[in-house]
Image (cartoon, rainbow, N blue to C red; front, side):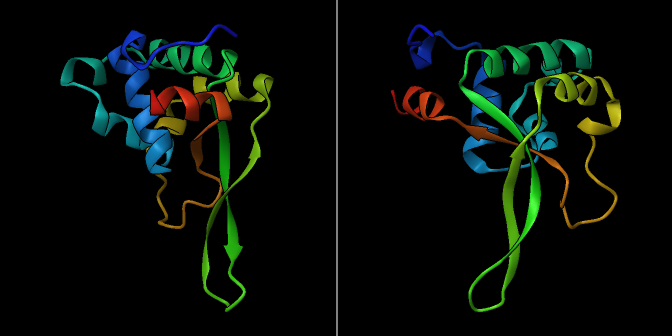
Length: 122
């Protein structure tokens, strides 16, 4: 992968990075998009995200339950969603909506890879 500079990212790519930095669920990306970008077909947004995944800059994971040593419950990014599954999941419009329950367990979340972390610090 060729090293990219932060200022070479499109506005939509940056929105996905902001989402990854905030450890928000996928649906949170809409808060970082302009009104016009929010109305783009989901497959166009998915293509941008998949490009970042293909470049090794972002991983898509599902939130999993986590319990601290002192018993507090929380969330942690779980396993990476395999590419074949990810393509299918991103094609489903409900994947881009907030879950009906507030637990977020199983919700898609974006995580910067080491390369993505380096890029976002440039």
